[in-house]
Length: 84
Image (cartoon, rainbow, N blue to C red; front, top):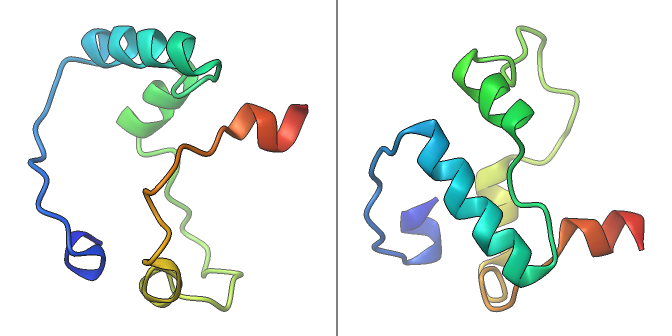
């Protein structure tokens, strides 16, 4: 993904509680929910991986390539998109 978008960002690990604290502060500033404790639990338990074959027809790599000119240029709130 970084190569497709032309990014050079470091990736590093943080304790889950620190991640939740940081995302809660960012979420408050943005008026959004960025990450929930339930999502962190699901990620840590590999619950977001399905053993079933994909149902979609678009590869993430293709979608990234098609949308790379606008990705990351502005914040897009999930709360506003789905609940307001």
